Length: 119
Image 1 (cartoon, rainbow, N blue to C red):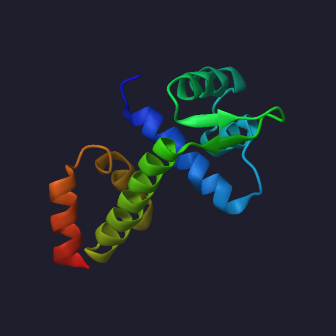
Image 2: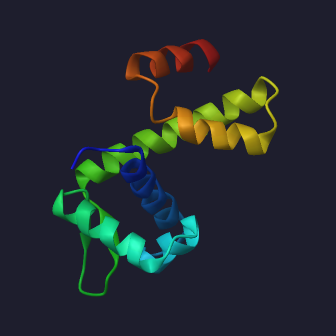
Image 3: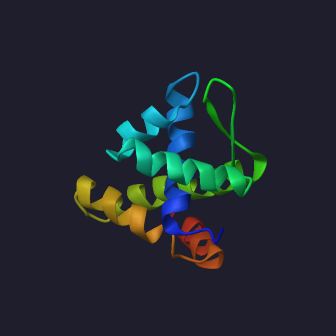
């Protein structure tokens, strides 16, 4: 599975939900995004098949080491970029939405340079 923006978003959502709840289920992801259960189920199957998530007998979803690495990277980028955009005067709702887009496309080198320059 090529790691697409949507896959990165799913992994990031699992990380965020897991910080708020004891366990993550497909229903939680549906509620997070407003997606239909079938859509989330298909994506969870793909993520599991590709080694990014584990799903136990209770349908609790956890990130594997590789899934966690990607989720943490996306979450860090999202948090940093949102704060940066707000700091330079972008309204919060737009800053958060734009950060969600930019986090997927900025190179590691550019992101590290931005952190160094603006932290």
